[in-house]
Image (cartoon, rainbow, N blue to C red; front, side, top):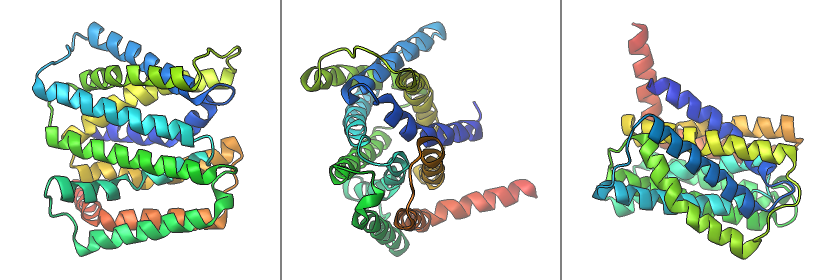
Length: 299
């Protein structure tokens, strides 16, 4: 598979995922929506692994990757689905744009990486200012319980970032689709437990838009998106993968505005701009290397 094609695929899937998450929970419980999504993902990914005879590695590093990926997926998605009901869909992508900043700090603390240069610290400070601007403007978050939703999403971003750093440390070389199956299989029982304790009932009626969003997330968000993501992080440096988060927040905000009628206030745009600018400063070396690579390809 072409790495640029996989990279573009991740951008498109990640940009549409926040809106699909919100639509999938309308008319049904958030726990049921995420459970069905993961169930679809396990079935589809398992069938692809069987048909293509990829195999499911069970050596030590693979098992550790499945466990870390599954726990990280469960924590991040459970909190995201809960919090997504109270904030604008585009804001979900904006907050996940903070993940490279969090991952940089965690990598320095856990892996001993000397990544906290003055420029990267400046990027983190800008991102924090942007987040503060969004916090201040409560009206831009979506409505009642917006602060609780925002805090849940921030914790989801922390869990996601921590799992990313841990997976890079494990450095498993299993096929991306096999890693997807293992990750989903580990997380699925945990989602069953959450559904049983928070709801435990099947919805009487499944709205068409909710059902379509769940199917889309189950196939593209949970299988194709995860497989592309695991593929890309094996072929590109983490800093270049992080650049995806420079693009998806703006696309997600526009999609939420056009298709979900979400009003994007000036303060939300300002906070988003500060976060993205901080991320650009933080990942300046990666941006510069991409520019040099592009010039080299032209010549």
